[in-house]
Image (cartoon, rainbow, N blue to C red; front, side):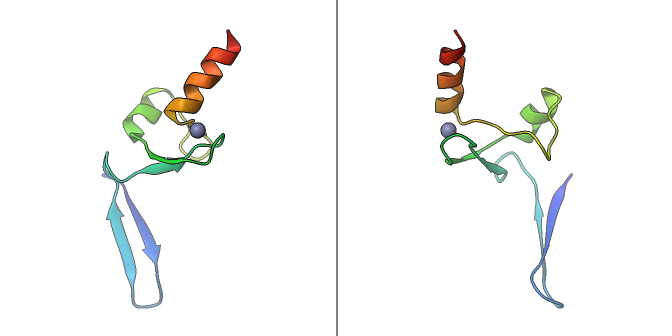
Length: 67
Ligand SMILES: [Zn+2]
């Protein structure tokens, strides 16, 4: 299990468990926020801190433009 700890102030820290439903990223192409599955990122040898993940629409456009 992984979780995120966010310190709000001296007394309050929020701990949020990472699940397959609460991890999001922003597409570097169009800026759209979308849900990602960390399992998919890791299974593609992704680097959690530097990997940019394109949304489905931009991924499709990028694949088309390469052909
Ligand atoms: Zn996009």
